[in-house]
Length: 60
Image 1: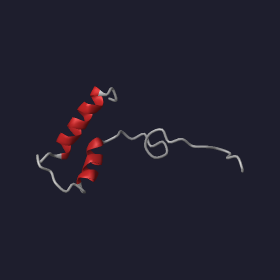
Image 2: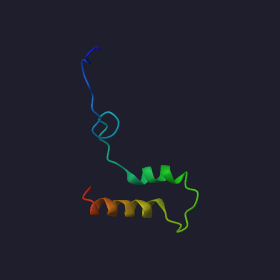
Image 3: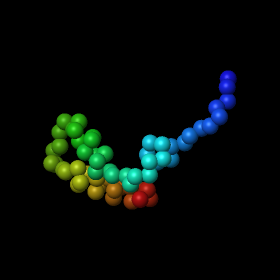
Image 4: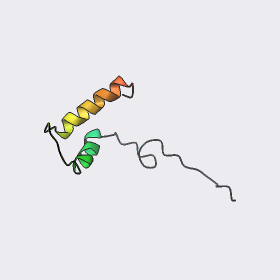
């Protein structure tokens, strides 16, 4: 087994892209596959709730 000369760790986005995370864009990507939206929530409303949950968990 050969030892690597270097190991890169991605600590954020893909290989050190430090652009600000945009949760709404991620939610929009997921919403393309939603089969049913009984409460007619917008991507912004869903992301607002996700942000609130993350705050409660101490992640924001």
